[in-house]
Amino acid sequence: MPSFSKYLSSLLLSGTLIVAPAFAQDSGNFIEDLKALAASGDVVLNFGEVDDRGNGSVEASDITAVAEIEGEDIAATALKMSVEGYQKTATGVSFDDFQLNTLTAALPDDVAVLIENISIKDLIVSEDENADLKSLLQPYTSYLVENIVLNIGGNTVATFASGQGKSSHDEASGTYSETAEWTGIVFDIENSPEGQFRTEAIAMGYLQVHASVVGNYTIRPAEGIIKVENFTTNVDDVASLSYSLTLGGLTEDVIRSLSSASANVTELSQEEQEAQMKQMMAALLQLSVIDVTLEIKDDSITQKLLNRQAKEMGMTGEQLAGAAPAFVSAGMQQFNMPEFTAQVSQAVGTFLQDQGSLIVSVKPDSAVPVMQFGMTMGLNPASAIDLYNVKVEAR
Image (cartoon, rainbow, N blue to C red):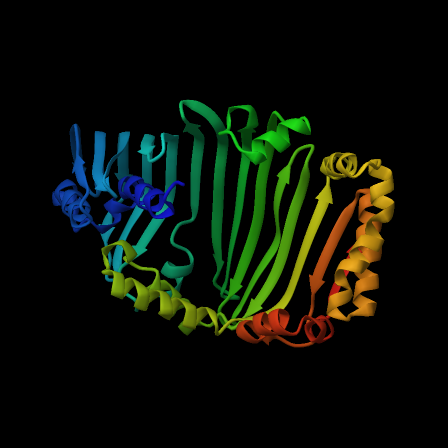
């Protein structure tokens, strides 16, 4: 089985070509500082040609990064890297524009990734935990990633046409906002590795699927609120999954603690990483749940799943959809929640027959600490259903 840590380390190696420039000390020794930073992580970084145009403007070409990770040689290359408006700040560094072109990475298990273009505007990297809040919550004004290709075993299994995001800050209200949109995503299931998922998908007629991801969020530090709205993953002719949530307790202290806990992870020892993880968990536990909504909208997958499962049971898809409420009721009897069981059974039955949307919502009367929410849902679901106003409905 592929090693997750090996993949993570490999991706971090590729990321060295993206984020390392942010820690150079000045444009005069920009390239040497990059090499020193890479070497601190046992990565050998080399450049073909370098053009330092002065005033924080540097362009480099034919860049390579090589490292040995878990006994395997991992390599990443970039055709060109350019930065504009680089300058040292009191708490870190900033760029007006950062671009990386034709990034390729050879990952473990015969996986290869190509990214044709990465562009980030107004990039700020803060090395000081006392940096101003804006640099932590708005580290860039926009990014664009174009033409990603994922290959496994020499076969193209996925492509991404474009991913972009924009962030803004309303100084009057103190609100930070960000929108993200990834479009032109294509998964070639016929070219994907052998396995149950591939077999099942092809059996239902899915040889290639097209997808997109869109969403936005706002953070209001003065109120300690983060709100995610309609973060939607849509797969054409399959289904879409959307979620919205509001969390409280995201104060400036928590934001700084989370920022500090996530900084420079790759440069820490195992013990230091564990301590940092504990710090991050402690910060996350200060958050509270205000509301959560999850919606699944069918786009033909439901009938295909019904037909496939019904065939194995000697039934038709329509017969299985009609019998589903009884199956759900029987399966939920152990929880001793008759009213909620009836609600879920009816919603699932309606969804399977009408094939519209299935919506799960959680709206407690007041904010609930994350730890309390998780423990109650896990240890006493019957109580949690009433306490947190959990609803399941079909539309």
